[in-house]
Length: 184
Image (cartoon, rainbow, N blue to C red; front, top):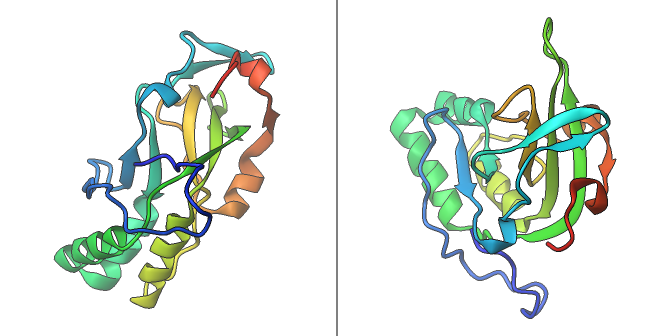
């Protein structure tokens, strides 16, 4: 996954150099984010009295389990992977960090509610990817582009299927200062 270069002219959409990541063991399509721009301060964060721990690995989920299952149901196993690869290869996967952080909460009866702190991203290629899927008869809502940075009571984070789910899960915006982030 390539961070956007702010010096590029706006509207530049060259094909992505991001290699096909393959489907995860959890049947999701994710791309890792890494490098010095994603180095988080060590240790947990306390937000609204809850302890959030840094996520072990950082990624952007392009297609969750439900989306992959719908594509497999429509196109079969090998056909689904071919379709996903083709749609992926046609997209520009450069992103821009927004520096907007949200605290999410999902009830987990009977235990403590799951929580996460995410950073929203600008990732135009994600909408292009979902248009390509819709063109093949598998329309799905475009999930909000984000990276889960810290979690509470559920180490893998909280799935966010679409903008309605994000609105329902969002508790509030969290400031850079609250997270101990001085530069990103």
